Image 1 (cartoon, rainbow, N blue to C red):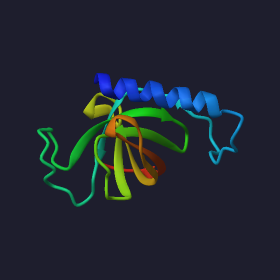
Image 2 (tube, rainbow, N blue to C red; image 1 turned 180 degrees about the vertical axis):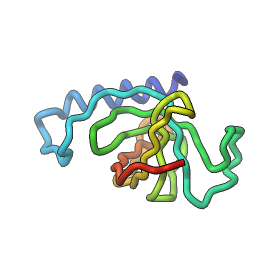
Image 3 (cartoon, rainbow, N blue to C red; image 1 turned 180 degrees about the horizontal axis):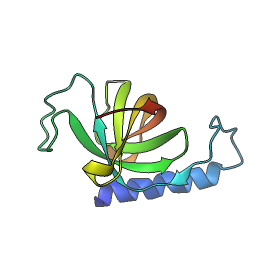
Image 4 (tube, one colour; image 1 turned 45 degrees about the vertical axis):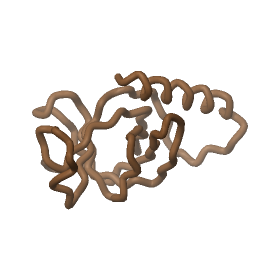
Length: 124
């Protein structure tokens, strides 16, 4: 995991721990730490300038996971609200989820954090 991403995750975790119990949570499902590289497919995007195997796919670092969604970091603000997430390391055994970005904010080190709600399974 890239050093800047790791540092940012640690900063966000410290703030979350400080604020726990002081703010009302909007989340209905418990979150668990989930630090993995995950694939994001942007519908309608066939050329994003990356050297990935799949056109329209970017790789991001997840922060946490719940039954209803995932949080991840990326270096750019993604414009699309509808995405498809690929959870898993092996392309043949990934779980693909149609998802909706419900929260985006610029955080430390010029990174963006996204909160994503799962909408349903996707067939790829």
